[in-house]
Amino acid sequence: MTVYDKTKKYDGMVFFKRPKDTLNYLYLDKVNASTLLIYDLLCDYYNSEKGYAYPSMDTLALDSGMTRQAVGTHVKVLHEYGLVKIFVEKRKGNKKGEGYKYKPQLPLSREELFKRYPEARKRYEKKANKIKDRYEKPEIVEVKIGDIRF
Image (cartoon, rainbow, N blue to C red; front, side, top):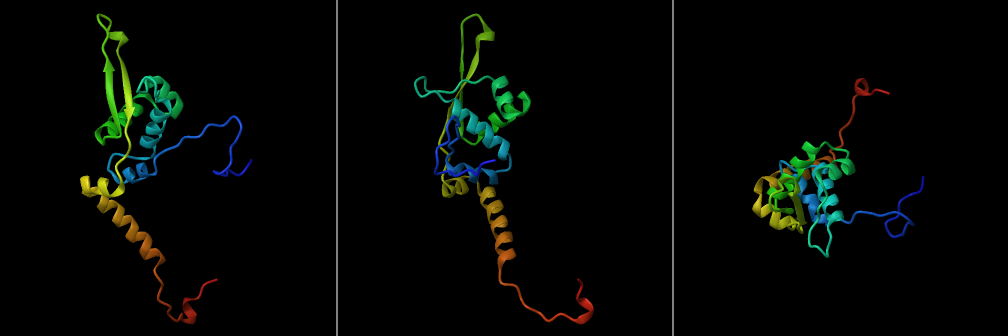
């Protein structure tokens, strides 16, 4: 195994590049790491010449290791929180020809996200306070001989 160094280039390897502000969305009730993986995939499939991404649900399921149903749920969550706009291509007479087109959107900043979704701010602050409490300078107390265990 080789240590990954983000400052180096690796021949034949492609990496996702994600706006760091998407991590703030993890404090929303319906968003988890799998949701952000689907966002990453949609961003990766985005075709700037066409102006959208158009992977099938089967492709997203295969790439993510999820079921089609799970992918669909995550896509709906991304749409609900404004990270992806969804369009459909309607073809005359052939309903099987319909396909979803996705336009990934830049995430809100932490400040904007927390203003729009106060419950996310509460979750973030609760977690931050828990971490802060863990690292606060502990009170040093004398131990009685009967309390010592090795």
